[in-house]
Amino acid sequence: MILKEIINNVKIESLIGNDSVEVNGIEFDSRKIVAGTMFVAMRGTVVDGHDFIEKAQEMGAIVVVCEKLPKQMKESLTYVQVKDSTFALGLLASNFYGNPSQNMQVVGVTGTNGKTTIATVLYDLFRSLGEKVGLFSTVCNYIDGEAYPTDHTTPDALEINKLMAEMYSRGVKYVFMEVSSHSVVQHRINGLHFVGGIFTNLTRDHLDYHKTFKAYLEAKKLFFDNYLDKKAFALTNIDDKNGNVMLQNTQAKKYSYSLLQQADYKVKVVEECFDGMQLEINGKEVWVPFIGRFNALNLTAIAGTANLLGVDFYKVLIALSAMKPVSGRFEPIVSNDGKIAIVDYAHTPDALDNVLSTINEIRNGKNNLITIVGCGGNRDKGKRPMMAKSAVSASDKVIVTSDNPRNEKPEDIINDMLEGLTDKEKKKVLTIIDRREAIKTAVFLAQPGDVILIAGKGHEDYQIIGTEKLHFSDQEEVMKFFEN
Figure (cartoon, helix red, strand yellow):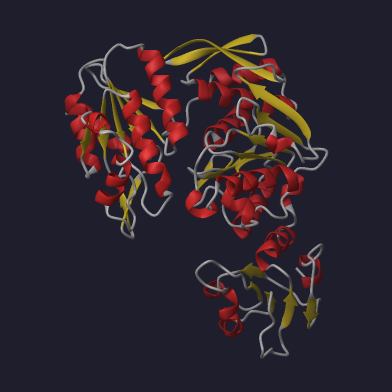
């Protein structure tokens, strides 16, 4: 593709060279440059891409996009100066790959909790209706059934557009995408066209990155402010106090869903047990194999979104009844002697509160609840005592253990958690650093009918200790100990 087509709609400060040069690829990692590539020099938190312009030139870059022009420029190269390279990358990538998001129905899901469940179940639901569908999620990206592993909730702008181009070439009509707060402020979704956006809820998370809750909220709100036009829809959870805040400045058509008040999509939990629940959504009842009031809201958002995308509401409910929970999201595992383990990704105080309250509502004081919980290293330390407090307040026994300690000492993380407890509360707590031993101990302590909540890692099949990523699955471990 020629350069002038790639820089279309990109605000250019200056262009030195030939805007008709042929470009065969875009990269922001100088190590991936081959002859004929455009190199986008971006300023990161650790390294500055401008320091690698010379290397990119040596590797065969034909165009350099940068914020600051290098002192020595090659006559054979074209230099495109922009105000913000990171902001420009999304537009450049969209143009290079033919603006695939404009040719599909792309819906973004944002919020603290529930993104993965909503995006994944929407993907499954539309596939069950015979549609070709794409998915961008924390667990894995998919193109109509084919998995593409991911390391981020929302990939970088190049990867997004590359996958979207592949989706479009394979006939995909609908794309459902988890939109993280990081991806919004880092402009990873810049240049994408969304037909709709969903807001789930907002609770404390990622403050190690955003620093304040206000900044975190504003990052989420930017998605509705900047990425939804007047033809799009914005569907928000008005049970969350920030639900209406998200809609304050959006151009999109506004819709709501709720468990507690009147809304465009209103849900009521009629009955629930560990096998599922009976819901009433807009006056129509449906049985679903999901558990918890938070999932009642998630499923209502899903039903509302499908309806807003043109699917008959009755068809939506029939499809919902056949859907299955997402791996590691309130995933029940039952032993032969009747012990129940729940594996859940809950890694924020609010998510943990929701899961614990759901378990306690269903067990209704019968049998015991043993909760295994930890916190990740090199992440928001402020939520650690809150996580321990939530677990102890709603459990009969708590085992505090390792999550992904990363470069912190597990003992230090556990001590931070225990600081949130009184001496009396600490009597309910065991500290077992080794997560495998923690799960084994919980299974040993549990009696038939007891519930073991294993919180924090959910779908993850690894544990990060130091810089090593080691295989570890909560599901595999608990099944192994149940069998033994």
